[in-house]
Structure formats: C-alpha cells, structure tokens
Amino acid sequence: MTLRQYVEQLKKLVRQYGDCEVVYAIDPEGNAFHSVYYTPSLGYYKDGEWYAADNFEIDKDYLPFEEDPIINAVCIN
Figure 1 (spheres, rainbow, N blue to C red):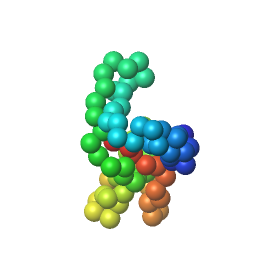
Figure 2: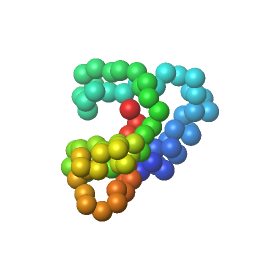
Figure 3: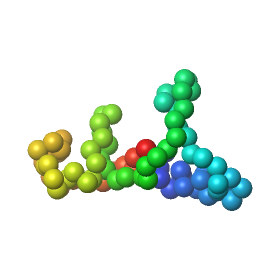
C-alpha cells in the first residue's frame, strides 16, 4: 500500500470518526492490539529491515547501501 492510498482511506474515516483512538494489530490474526503513540517517520525499508531517516547522517556504517540513502517508506508506529 502506498502512503497516498493510506491517506485516502483515512480521509474517508476522519470526517465521521476523527476523534477515535488509533490502534494497531500485532499480527495479521489480531492476537493483540495496542495504541499508536508515535507520529509517522521516514526511512528506508528493504527485506523486512527498517532504517530510520533520522540515522542516515548519524551512522552511515549501519546503512545497507553505499550511495546516498533514499527514503522509500513511512513507518506508522
């Protein structure tokens, strides 16, 4: 899903449900749910690994790529 698709769905919900709490499922089966506490963050996502954009300049050795990092994902929690 792209950020654009996600936001379009949120726009439909916010009109009627804008004051509802936001939660997330810990797995696809819905075995548990938790509140969302953080605002979205930018980063690089590949093969199940997340690299926060905040760390791009701090520690380049931990990045899995040689070239300048590219933001390709938004983490929602």
